[in-house]
Image (cartoon, rainbow, N blue to C red; front, side, top):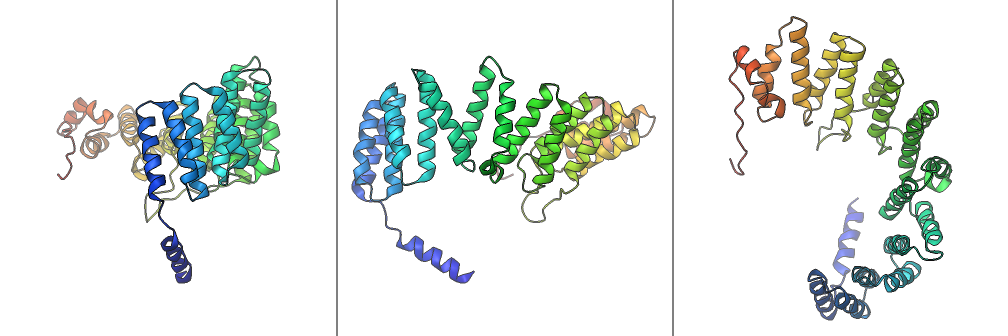
Length: 355
């Protein structure tokens, strides 16, 4: 460990600074670009390229020059510049970005052969750069084109082909492709296929190795709920949280849609399964375990309302809501209930830096 850190420091120490002529040239180009003088900026970025003594910097100025030509409305020249960079860049991520931009410009230009070439390049990016941002963006644009086309259902066959591609299966894009396939199958009414696709994804890529873990389980639960299977929906949501844990160091392993999923679980118990005890426990999970969620006030208020409707004492929760979460939307609307419980109405004060 110590030798690796030393090697890194030595490597950083040996990295020579950029030359003054290069820095001056790029500063002139940046000023022109920021002022909206895109043709001038394109020329200045091109002049800066031979002054770069690092291949990465030369690739960057070439990319910026091509982008400036695009912004100037010189689409043909921009496409030519991006094509040249895509085939010769020393830095693979920049080559991939250049290929993506050239494809998008071809789609906009829509000349003879442009669309076919653009689609081929987008497909190649998805297959060859699945772990890069350009590959993910290519996937988004490819699906948008299906949605804008005459047969949006064609996306299902296309996604299924991507889902069986070995290069994609071994990449981070695998989860997104399978999740998007399942979503489209569900929307097409092919629920059994959708459920199988999600379940295969979860078994192949578990928690911590699947960026669509919470998205997928939430969508699966909603699909099962729409199909009249609330128990199956709850089981899908339970599976979402089964491997979940908080972190004792920085933050937690909570996915962005986990709070939404946890609140849905409580509402299914309350409204569909008519199980107030289980609903109360599910609400408690939201406001106790998901301590940084913006949905804690919803969970606390709905749990208190549920107790009130059952003739039980919801006052402890109402008081807790207006005390702990005084600035939340639900606490502000709970003034009357808080007074009835003997609590002062919520007093929300804007946080001031340094207070």
